[in-house]
Length: 118
Picture 1: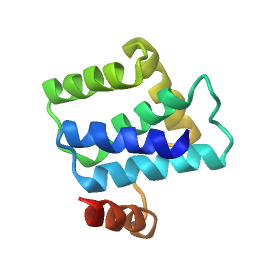
Picture 2 (picture 1 turned 135 degrees about the horizontal axis):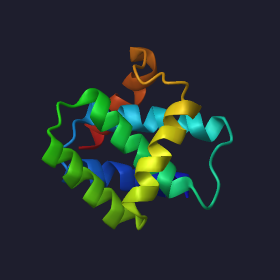
Picture 3 (picture 1 turned 90 degrees about the horizontal axis):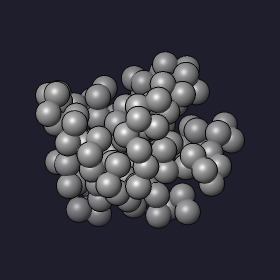
């Protein structure tokens, strides 16, 4: 399920015109959660959604209506409630120890792969 979730994250990000670097950051956040053992069948879509949302907020210059559009798309694509997503965003932030700014060497491999695919 993890590769298909990452594919969904990428497709959704493209629909919302997010930059490849934003998707790359979301991937890194998501992988960190996987490595920490935080993912399970119940929360994996919420984790993926929260990672995309956090990456978009930290790396993009989104306006309020763009964030709302992104949340709408996440809700539609991953079939969860926006209230659950907003609540889970904080859970993910804590699991990542508030470390949203990532070193280049963590983001670059994903970025290269994404830009070569498109």
